[in-house]
Image (tube, rainbow, N blue to C red):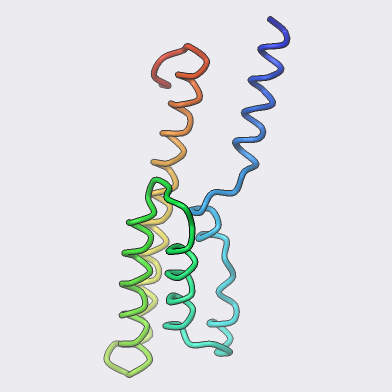
Length: 123
């Protein structure tokens, strides 16, 4: 029994320590774009490319859609069609959507982990 508890704790620690694509999206540095070294549209196009090259995961299509939308918004901002405030609003909305995706992914992961332990649905 102690072995099972130890294995379950180790699996939980590994699962929590593993970086998911959603976490990578949230933690990626936007300093180059913020400092003006690269254009925002290039920054989000790079995120889109990175996602396209990542193996399938829950939420991938949602993130790719967000990246694509932000490439478009970035180009609108860079060409002067929208204000900085409108662009920053789009970025804040993106952060909110990514956080919601992360929370849903975490809930699915916890439910799967609980089910693997024979506990059924996680509540």
